[in-house]
Amino acid sequence: MIKRLSAEFLGTFWLVLGGCGSAVLAANFGGDGNPLGIGLLGVSLAFGLTVLTGAYAFGHISGGHFNPAVSFGLWAGGRFPVSELVPYIVAQVLGAILAGFVLWQVASGSALFAPDAAAAGNFATNGYGAMSPGGYGMTAALIIEVVLTAMFVVIIMGATHHKAPAALAPVAIGLALTLIHLISIPVTNTSVNPARSTGVALFGGGAAMGQLWLFWVAPIIGGIIGGGLYKWLGQDDAPAAAPAP
Image (tube, rainbow, N blue to C red; front, side, top):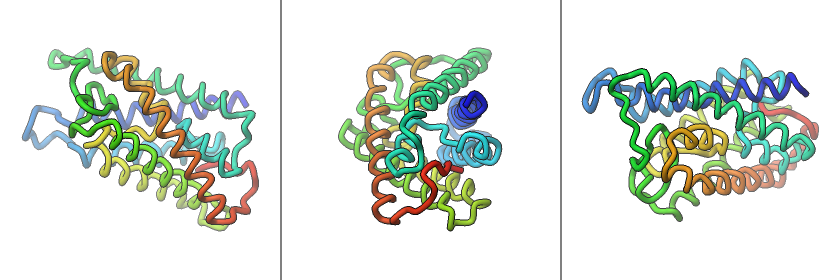
């Protein structure tokens, strides 16, 4: 169990450092119109690549959840024991917080870094209303986070089913997370992962902390819906403890 929790810690650390790091350090590098900035597409790809590479590196050890909503979804789908939910979630959140700390230290080393806790998407934080990159309200944020997390869990369970080609599971899951970001960065700056939201909100502070509750509630509800839906829809007959990629 210690090794499995360590793998979840490291995998979540990598996801937040890579995904949020690309948003903070590289998305708008050099200012508006600078061709070196990777923009929305680049950030979306970065999140997909982190989960893809993390799944190949750590999936065979812990199942490669890296996300409390995924752990809840796999439990709802009959793939993960309830007794391991809390330890997994603690490890994931701690990994995300360490990544947020490292990213803050790196970003603070630039003379151009001027954090504004009131700005939408500040320090890759998630939010709605004034904290939404596109000014979307709470209802829109709630709906998009529930729906996209549910579909993410459905894709994870399908890709990791014992009848699916196991070697390609991380690719499908990484591409799914890329697509999710392409859809929802303008709405909430994309969470679908309570640990990811927490790791940067603690350092972004301000309104991001006040809105953090939604990015726990919505993804977990979505994860449970997705896990239950796949179990019903697919008549899942994979082993009860089968891991994610």
